[in-house]
Amino acid sequence: MLHMNQPVAPMDKSVLQPSHQQRVMRSLRRIIHAVDIYSRRLRSDHDITTSQLVTLQAIAERPMIVAQIAREIHVTPSTLVGILDRLEVKGLIARTRDREDRRLVQVMLSDKGREFLTRAPSPLQATLADALFALPQEEQTIIAASLETIVQMMEAKSAVDGPLSE
View 1 (cartoon, rainbow, N blue to C red):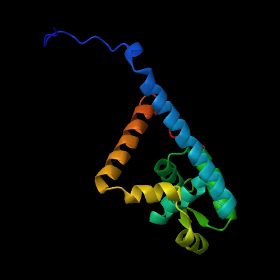
View 2 (cartoon, one colour; view 1 turned 45 degrees about the horizontal axis):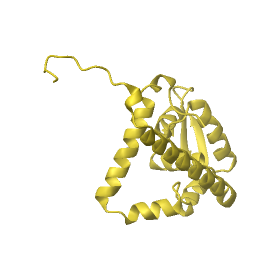
View 3 (cartoon, rainbow, N blue to C red; view 1 turned 180 degrees about the horizontal axis):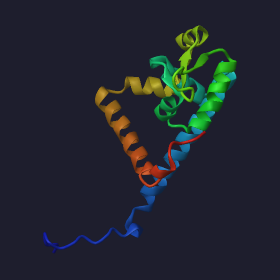
């Protein structure tokens, strides 16, 4: 019997259900695979990558400096610079240096970028977006919260590594 003042022994990880671990791992691998396939389709059908599309959508909300965008979309600033270079070559964004602090570069959509976003596909697979939309609001909330919990669990030990790079 466990008494209130008695310390709780650390959990023995060998007690974890292997079947749950395998199910989670398989599900994550299937998600990654589906995202990869959709990203390739985006590139071939619309000449844009998922990272570029997510970047455009973030900038559309409000012009931002590079570091803000990197935090917003969870990539390193150096990775973002490559994404921005490709978007700039396509004429979808414009970058301007801050007059007072030349280290700061503000990024905004160009007219072409704004027009592109009006007809741009979703960064989510259409089948997933449609299926989520069809679910009751409560289930959508549960799915979003569960995925956020998984992200937090995965980032807990790697928080010192910084944002993801692509």
